[in-house]
Structures are given as structure tokens and as C-alpha cells.
Image 1 (spheres, helix red, strand yellow):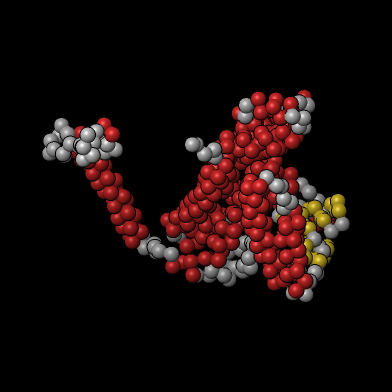
Image 2 (image 1 turned 180 degrees about the horizontal axis):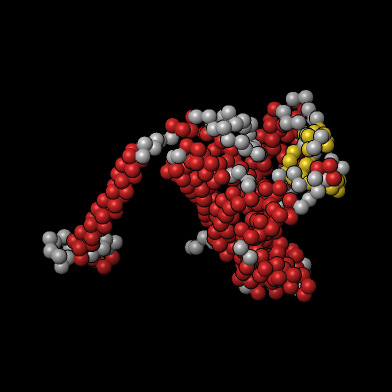
Length: 401
């Protein structure tokens, strides 16, 4: 058999494509025509909406563009992560709103994950009372509107005593209707450098752990990670802090006049929003965790019990790692829901990006730009969460052979 001839059945190339015929009976031609027609109609609608909007704004002499961001805001903001004064620009005011939104979203995601996981595990507990309490929490918290829960927690926090009669459960900690006052330290550049050293040490610890696991897979000898973790995450920040003079000045809150001075404050608005979002989202996360654990084959439990493992170790080392492959995708949706639900902060007076942007567009009259900023902020946060969770999901997914 000649080597120049090949069996056409073994060829990787597909069947020859038919040429495009200029006839309405050709499916490919009809598909192209319909696609072009739909895209053209959408383009015409978008152009009409844009031109109509621009014309109406010009008729009403409403300014357009984002030039207002450089003007003085004159907007008071109760709490912010960065220095802010009403004489600052709208750009800085909106930046404060974005940071306030992130402060709720990041802390809320972490706390909701912890609480939801614990409640979901408790739902499967062999303890009848614990299981029923977890089930009652899940059913009640998911059936109540989130806005109602936010108003409930805000009302509860507003019933706390005034600062002069504040509760003092622990030394330096005060609870009043102005919020919770906590001791803190005077933050200096040395503390910022130590924090950066801690982040760098954490990253190096992960790399060292990966290298030790690779060596263990190669020779089968287990190696301890904790000495390296202690040195990188504890010793390195401590050395940086000591090298810059080891400053440590505690800032203890104290009652002066009609309010407290010093320390840090957790405002009632932030606390109510955080408690409401965490408890509400945790109810849904608990059901996701329960379903993920029950999705793991019962034989995994039986095999581990046959080896003499305790139930807690089985759950931590065998069941949960497998359940994560089921838990992560719906968990991503709950993280997105928590972030977007934080826009209800305006109902209890917490100044997030929605509240500040609404005030901005009311003062400047530029509603389109204000709404666009809100949309861009939530779109960016949501896409960032989705990208990270999809990346993590791909890391723990089973690789098919």
C-alpha cells in the first residue's frame, strides 16, 4: 500500500463545507441576515435613546460629563476609612462611599461564611436540640424580608442607653446608642510596615507549604510547616516593628462631655447593616453547606469510621474538602447577593456608595452620571468576586483524565 494514499476515514478534517449560496433557502445565509438585522435594530434603538437623552438634557440646560467630580462636595459623611472633610471634592466623597461599601461586603462575606458553615453543620448534628435550633434559625431568617431585619436590628441598637449611662461589659469597651467604642492603638508608619511584612510572610508561608508538599509527594516524608509559618508570619512582622522603634501607644476611649473620645467606633448604622446581612445570608449558606455535605457518598463516612477516625476529623479532613466542589458555585451567588443587598444601607442611614451617589446627583442634577457610577462600582465588585471564586473553584475541581 502506498504511503501517499491515506484512508479518508482516518483523516481529522471534517466533511467539506458547502459554499454559501445567495438563496433564501440556504440556512447559513438566513442566519447571517437575521443576525445583521437584529444587531442593526439594537444599534438603532441605542442611538435613538442616546440622541434623545442628549437632546432633552440640552433643552433643560442640564450639564453632562464627569467634570462635577472635581468640585467641592459640601457633603458631611459620618464615618470613613480615609480622611474626609466636607470641603473635599465629590471624587473623594464617592471614594469614601466605595470604601464603606467594601468594608461591609468584605467583612460580611467572611462572617456569613463562618456563621453559615457552623449552622449548616449543626443542622446535620446528631444532637436533636442543636439540629432543631439550626433548622428553626434557617427557616425563620430566610422567610423574613431583609429590609425588615435591618430595621429591626437598627431599632434594637438605638434602644441602648445614652453615652453617660453606657454599658461597660469589659474595661475600655462601651456600648451606647452612639455605637460601640473599642480600645485601639495610635496607628503609625511602623504599624503599616509591620502589616505589609505580615502579608509578605503569609504569601511566603503558602509558597513554602507548597514546596514542602511537593517534597513529601516525592519521597513520602512528612515535613512540618509551623516553624516556617511562625518565623515568617510572626517573627518577620515583629522584627520590622522593632526595627522602627516598636511604637505602641494605646488609645483608650473615655467619656468627655456628652460623648466618648478616643479609640475606634463601630456605629449603630454599620453594626445593624452588618448583623442583618450576615444573619440573613448565613441562612442560605447553611443550606448550601448542608446540601454539599450530604452530597458526599455515605461510604466515605463508613470507610473513615472503619479506620477509627473521629466524626469531627472525618468532616474536616475527608467530607468538607469533597463537599467544597458542590458548595463553591452556589456560594458565589450568595456572596454576590450580600454585596448587592448592602445597597439597602440607605434605609438605616449608613453612607455607602448608593447613599453618597444619590446625594451627589441630587446636588448636581447629573443623574445619569451618578447612576452610571453606582452601576460601575457594583459591576466591578461583582466581577471581582466571580473571577476569584471561579479561579478557586477551578483549583479544587477534579481533573478528568
